[in-house]
Length: 308
Image (cartoon, rainbow, N blue to C red; front, side, top):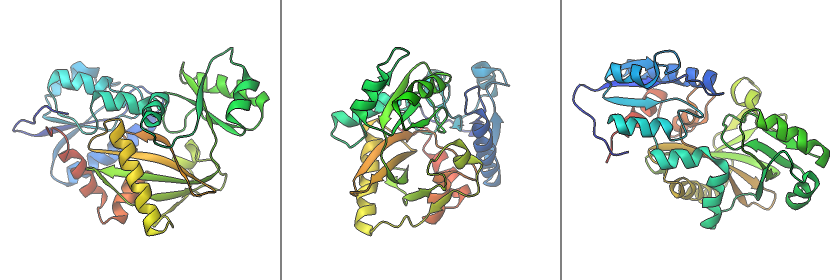
């Protein structure tokens, strides 16, 4: 993002909002706000759903914005575009990268065009040929809303008969729903900060599915740091994730989720341009393993706001 910060340097932390990820965003924002306050930054929390939307934000007259709004309305380019028009520098990716990153299907189209590995997928509709989809993609497969995060509305489908119900469940969250070939194997996530990859995390879930409960509520989910890969393999994974993030135009910070199959091949799943910053979140864990505590991480991310 290209607008330049002014002198007084008051920071508004945007969190909450009205997306399906509101509760997670409130936790992320509260943690970020506390870190900035500890660092001596003149920071104030702002929930657009409760404090008058963009008009309320403009009345605050912040010099910079730290975006901790997850999901639609915060992570999809609309907020970024509004802040561009208001001339307020903000953290993270710009309008195009935010919009692309929020759209799982179009992100995959970009990756495929560049020859980056991502599982085959199809868009679904209410009159889809369910048996045909299952035959083309194979079973099991994943059904997910195109524009949601935090694994909301995602289902692993084992039989063609279950596919329609999974579609209808995902359609409660988004009008656009996709089915994706399920990659059985190990799940990794790589955070990107200032164009560098932080240490990879291998996620292990007893249930085998890293869903909303496993992400934010369960104490049984295990995060392996170091991830267990050989150094050369982790370097290969890091390079792939940096390339995937750059492919959509990602800036500042973000996170890329990946599966590794039984043959050792990595498959890109999705990119997050405003990752979680809760006590269960992955970016802070990776940063800590690299020697960057939470407060230092937050100030590093804030420093990306307003760069030309």
